[in-house]
Length: 188
Length: 422
Image 1 (spheres, rainbow over the protein chains, first blue to last red):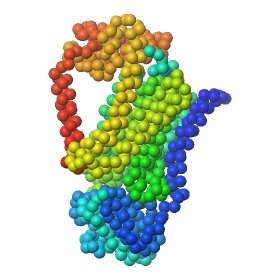
Image 2: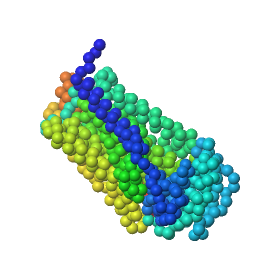
Image 3: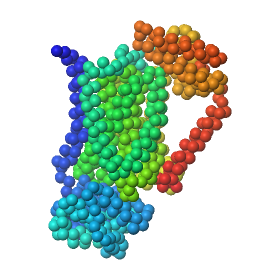
Image 4: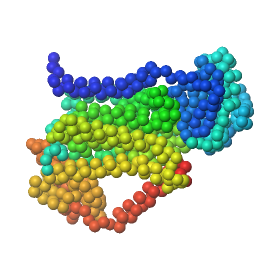
């Protein structure tokens, strides 16, 4: 049986050091991330910045999920959770019109295996009079709503998802929140 | 010239030698795991967007070709084994990317949790990406050192392996980014987002991207391995400084500094690109030039000591140490005696470089490179062009350089316009 030389042992330890460091990056950091709470309470009576000058008043009783919230100057996103229901808002620069923005979001939704857009697309407006369109979709074990607005060179996309029963309870609160969307006219 | 600049390899990375090295098997295992993970990601993209995925892979694979040749040409005199270069490239494209995707996302979330979502939005990409990615890429050069330490015999070798790891990472990351753009566009299996990403990330960001950062980190590891005349703490300090430099260059590039641009239009956008990208590019080019020239002096010195004009003349000695002069000598041979002479000069330069490396290793037999040099010399004599030297600068070469520069500027203009700078 061949003996392991001191040189091979050193080499093995070095290689294991590489593996441990890689494991720390690939699994250790995500584990550390998961060990810290990601939900923070948000006041339900104050506008919350989504990004690029867009704000929304969150639904009463909701929390913001920090892993899905990045309020940047040129674009941004926010992820609120109302119990098991997710309420996500994405703001991005966009050069097209409302219909092309809605088509883009619908294609992204239906691009996910198992997701289907259901029913007709309807008009919707915020309290400030910003016009948009909204619709609904289904996915295995859950349902969802979406809404799109275009203003000031930005597209504002709202997606709401959860189990049908939870969605039915939370939707009125979230729809009230969506009406408070505002864009101050400045991106950054 | 002392051997402080170059530590000649005593053995080569032969398969039988590699089989006995534990790190080799562990590296293969990591590459296999990375390949499985990245194949899963690629498979999902290919199922959803087959045309865009194929276009993206083809475009960015083509982009890798000039980078590959440029990096390997840096090390003309003492070429690295192709197998090790492929391993370094694969580490960057499979292992470093597979580790960086979850690691960077988690670190950015930690910035949001421990700092604020605003901090993560503004600085998350600048802090998380470079921290995880530079470590993962540097470990690729460490892995090369572990399996073939003898092949790292100059700082330039560290640069070459670091650049190859960075190149692999850059190409795979660009493919993933371009397909994410396709997904975000929500227009189905279209190639326009891929082409836009190719222009922006390939041309505008390509020069000062991961290949550059990897080269900087690799230079530090090369110094750590080669300069045994220095104290261990000094060498570790230099290596850490180089990796920190790579990290800092990456942070600067990803940072929101000047994100609003420096004025409107193309000049403002170009100014931002230059301000962020030029300092590390100039730094790496200066390091490469210095270590390349030192290595060239070392190997050319070995050939000069032979004093055999049939193997290499005095004028050929001055040509062999410079990539530009080697290329000029090949062009001159073609102008004077046609393509056969150009090919013979290329073969003779390679054989002369091979001989220099064998001399540095104090090899028992240098018969093979000597025979090859004499063979190519005879061909050149028959063609009436006996010496591989440079000639006067031709108008064709000047015109070709001018046209290439004009095309590069035009491509840059198109890319900047696509980015919205126009």
